[in-house]
Amino acid sequence: MSDKEFKRLSEFIHTEVGIKLPSSKKVMVEARLQKRLRLLGKAHYRDYYEYLFSPEGLEEELVHLIDVITTNTTEFFREPRHFEIMNEQTLPLWRSENGSGRPFRLWSAGCSTGEEPYTLCIVLSEFAARSPGFRFSVMATDISTRVLSMAKNGVYPEERLAKMSMELKRRYFLRSKDRAKRLVRVAPDIRRIIDFRRLNFMESFAFPEPLDTIFCRNVMIYFDRATQERLLQKFCTQLLTGGFLFIGHSESLTGMDLPLRQHAPTVYRKI
Ligand SMILES: C[S@@+](CC[C@H](N)C(=O)[O-])C[C@H]1O[C@@H](n2cnc3c(N)ncnc32)[C@H](O)[C@@H]1O
Image (tube, rainbow, N blue to C red; front, side):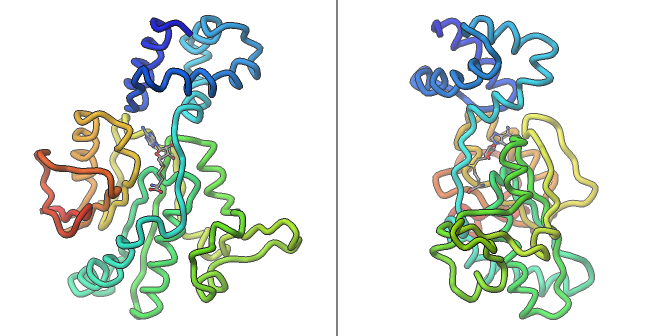
């Protein structure tokens, strides 16, 4: 891939997906794109580009290109402090302010293969078991259709639950009948709760009902600062006053002009 071709691709990706691809990523992108070229029977990157930028390519290929360039690493109970904060602070606060009049609404934005929204469902279900009348809804979105279908399926290798207590495993997961496969599946009651949808943060979005909590962790890290700030503004319009935003531990809102006040490191409250 020539430098010029890489530049064109990275500009296209930045506009469509918000992800910046510095030239240091060229080798990685080339390696990952090889598989697409092979599958499509394209001999050169320029043939792939011709297809990608054609009306058909924009319709069909963009979704695959997104899968090639996005990083989907995630895990159950990742950054566990956030779940402690929910349990000990934000959920009891919400409950004292809202009682049981309406459901608590949460959005896992950039949910990857589902470990984050399922963890949140577990945390919320445990809270509901201790708080009679507490109801909740969970929406989970991602740009990648590949990770979304894995998330909806809810099947994981057993070792992904290694850090989870026996009690939670028993309550929220089913083991594969074929033990040799060492797979687990999220219990149907939990799978049913989550409304999984495809959403590209670069598009405009508005939900019929505003949210009480948004988790957007380890997604913005791939965006430049202007893109991050625009996205955060959009999150703020979807978040109720008094609602909470959780971001990844390596992300920061410092210096941004947003209607948010820090509640704890990487946890913000809308004002
Ligand atoms: C590293 S994963 C983070 C998963 C989870 N939030 C966590 O912290 O474990 C980042 C996810 O963001 C998604 N993503 C990247 N760009 C996006 C965009 N423009 N719109 C929506 N999702 C995007 C990717 O597909 C990927 O699944």
